[in-house]
Image (cartoon, rainbow, N blue to C red; front, side, top):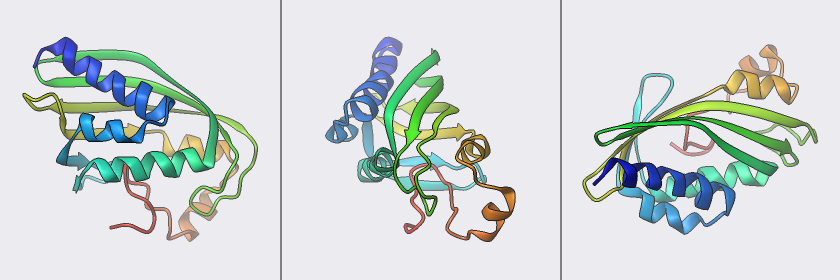
Length: 159
């Protein structure tokens, strides 16, 4: 798979899955199972259905989504992106009631793709604390809320 095709695959994820809500495209972008590295150092086996649930969770809580790929760098079978997500908090998100606030979330994604052009490994990092501060969550609320398991692709009620 060429480097440009790998970049195009990531862009499909951003533009078609996130922006256009074409969740079935996740089946074309992600391998049936892929390794998802978490910010706490663990790695979880995921699949396209987990991606769909994650996107649905965000889209049910946030509207007016503006997803911007700031930088995209590729080498071999890896694509790394720095992105910005601007959203309005219009629905409950993991126990946090809607605030109506327009917020900005930033992050970096590192994807490794197979020869077939599907994501087989990901490592995502996003500014979770910045996001929560923008919707008015205090540090004390975070510590006291055991539902805050903020793994990428993991909802508070899944393993």
